[in-house]
Image 1: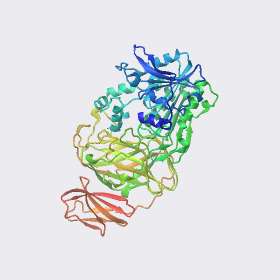
Image 2: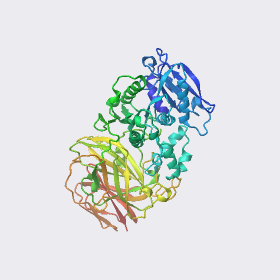
Image 3: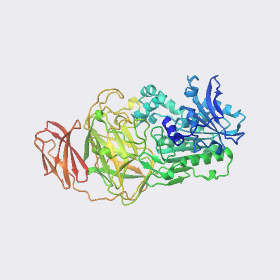
Length: 619
């Protein structure tokens, strides 16, 4: 988040800082402590309305640039800005932080503002991430002058799955929060199962029914909060005070969370993509919202559609007056042989090995870590890994649009008691770029959806199990000429904790076990991608070719293959993920007499690099 502020301030780095009208002023709290604040008043304003920002990231940064496009042009706009350091942080670091109630602190700041000679009568609040979450804390206290709020990439809820996606700790984000001074790791790692403690946290931090003022909630499709924000917004439309249920707005853009890297809410450059028509949209809408509620501006804000959201892939903005834009229908694509996604049931299985000591890496996405890139990035580097398998459609003949939460139903067998299933959904561009849209993960010991200690269900080697891997809410359009593709692996390092795959205690420093995993895709075990949409055509269907098969299996001296037309090369990989042999495929017979006894994977490739993966046992 400090980097987010630096990114916002970068254009003004060569300019002199603003001088607050009241610098490091002390704001008294009810317990006798005080918080430090800066107050910026436009030259033409004698008494005015306030935009309050409460931050744990140093109020002094705002001297370089005020938000919403104000920059250093304080006198060219009508609002008074009050920036306050949180209790225990920066200028307020001497204030006692034991059992802190940030909502009460926010109320007391509002009470202080109310009594100042330069204040008229209204207070709006603004801010991203932690600066957004504290707005919900303040709303709970219902100060009479707190008029409206603009929380960004923040949600008024806390729950187990906000930290443990699919039962897997989002490890990189937790350690980034530690680095920012929150010190949450001991608490989170002491509660790695869902429990009454998490129930209490969720109950005490779900603020939808505490909202008694208008809000403009701003989200990003590449933010890790997007699922919680979509659900929270829907709740706010029915649970907020009756008088303001119809004054809750939502803006969702093609944005990351911010805080690491150059991208942030409202910027045009996000990851490896650029969205010129999304630049400053968050500033413009927030400004119109504040002018309407704080200044009584006749700007037609009241007729703004309730949800404004960006169409990734196609570009452009869409609107809705519903409380939920998710499409309830699912279009289905089945995982099939030869790495294909098709509209008909699959055949056979695809095998791979996952080594926790060499886990498949995180490449962009909804991350929050200075170790990782944020936003949409090309996933093509994963194609070279032996522990990642892929499934894709043929080239699309029509645009395919989705709105909601995609998911993948996976049937698998493994030779270990536990593993994870990580899914990355991508758009394959005509030039071969594999651009990430969204991703998710599911720990198999929690495949039943029960994340309590008693809900663990370990796997018996060789038996087939199913799991549903949910992906975050998204609006995306694959254009005609592109392909829909998923990457499937057993880990997602370092964003998510790497499963040791031994069925033992989670989050230890043990070495772990290599897992040999068979992804089943047949009429009996129909692994499939579920896309929330109403698309009559999902791709160009081709006639089913005869399935490639290998025999005998187990084998002694030779491995024979059938239906190898179009295949040019093969690779043999052992259970450690090491490439044992790589050669051209000159016939339908491969000698394996030189191999040691054990289980292997053979990958066969065609001239376009498409992999067909099979497993076999050498006797």
